[in-house]
Image 1 (cartoon, one colour):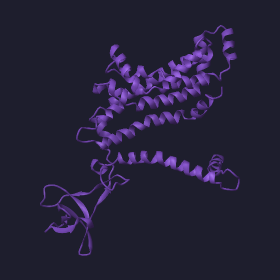
Image 2: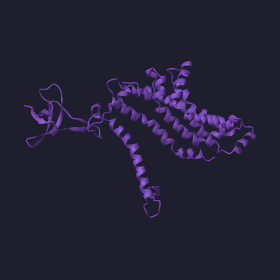
Image 3: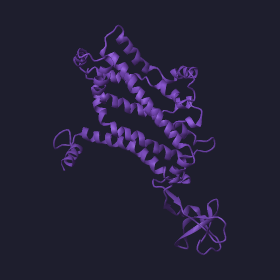
Image 4: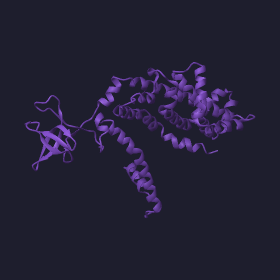
Length: 352
């Protein structure tokens, strides 16, 4: 009960007690607008992923997955779509056997006789709620979606672990050791954020070719491990760890690696969680670099594999939407699991 009361109090709280200020209205409009801007496209993609292929491009579009009802008509070889038609003031459901311009030839599916000519502007299709589960099952059974998913999970998991270790080691050295040029090295690392990705992409690819990691998942992982954002985030957080704690560990004859592994890393857990979230999002959604490095279908990551559903003359939107919506699940679970560390981790980077 107290949790419900506190939640209601939070949502109804105003800047001035008993009064609604203009800033309260602007805040609510901003929050509601931002929530809808994020939620509506995801909801639309989720609902569209359940639609049959023909319904995705239908205009005007519908939110719910519906499909036209097909009926068999005696005397015809193929089924026809069912339409609501008004004939002589009576509303009836009739099958469309032919359409020429603005005129359609309709017959009664239960008692087919001579076709009736009606204006297509006065008829509407008979639709029913249909969930196209084959949009999800076909890529899992007929295509290599599970292979793409396995490759993406491997790249994301390994790259995230290596990113945390490499960036934590660099941040530990830059925050807890004093040596000539330490500030210069830190500034150089941060300055690389201003270098566009396209500038370093060609040299990075030439290095990958030189070491023989082309068309290899390790060629996707290794160049992305070192991150200036990760070094900055972890260094700023490690500066908040008291130096006296590390000095006490050295007095107890603890090695530098033991200090790093048993003292610094546990205390840096909130910042590591934030960096882990960023790393998962970066690797999971990365498309350009895997597209350049990988050439074999069995090595494609999920984002590159989804591009395979786009042909030269047609785009299989029903599969793309379904697999895209399914690919949101892992990163959403990671964010929900680690999101409580975001505020603590980012706030701690500016304390010193």
